[in-house]
Amino acid sequence: MSEQFKIFLSQLSETNATLDYFTDFKKIKGNVNKIAIKLNQLNYLIGKTDIKAAVKELYEENPKAFEVLDILIAVRKKDKKKTFNRAGNIVLVETYFGSFETIIEFIEDTGLVNLFQNKDIKNLVDYVFGVEAGLDTNTRKNRGGDNMSKAVSLFFDKAKVFYKKEVSNTAFPEILSLGADVKRFDFVIKTKKKTYLIETNFYNGGGSKLNETARSYSDVAPKINQYKNYEFVWITDGQGWLSAKNKLEEAYNIIPSIYNLTTLKNFIEKIKAENVISEW
Image 1 (cartoon, rainbow, N blue to C red):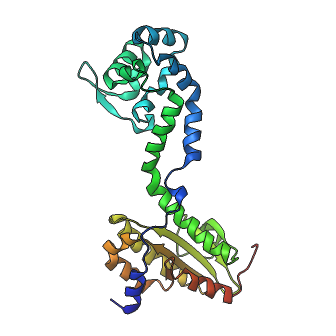
Image 2: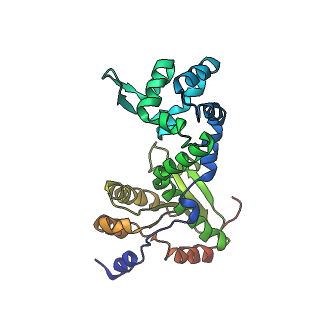
């Protein structure tokens, strides 16, 4: 292991998270608003001692109100969750909402009946907002990549470097080596010397994905770098790489331009010296 690569590893950050990484309130609010009318109708059940009678009244008025019952137990329809019903058959959770009898079975067997009767839930819109906030934590992994893109953008913006985001390789037809597959680069920066095609990512944890990424970029970089007017740049960070440092070292020795958030300033100095082209 070279001293230069050892330094690169020592610079890997514990996190790239800003506070807006943890919860996407805009998305949560949007999800709740989509079903707020039905949730408000289900509020009719809160405090009713005779749940069956109350469900029957509401079902006769608007059976579609019960289509959102699954979110009350933190289940989304797209997840296609299955369960054993009272008859011992495996069914999708969403199939409970098609008849009065199965709705009652769902409310009783999930324990919602007690929450309704005891007024443990005061307002289902507020309750589901909390449920959505909990479910949103499952999407944090996806936001990690977005957060890295955001962090890199901040570096470029601060340095007043013009860039474009999410640019397809079809914008550069002269690069024939990538084949017919369409690849979208996170950033593209042009200087008077070269066009830089940039990928960014951040890994908190390990896994096979890291090896795949390193292998993929090790393959892509020489295909792009063979064209003198183009260069592939990889900006990556995160201590997840410590579990895949051998594969990262291989890539480090193949790809001339690998940076982390600490060394990104070196890349910015380089491209500014080459005079970044604006508004291309």
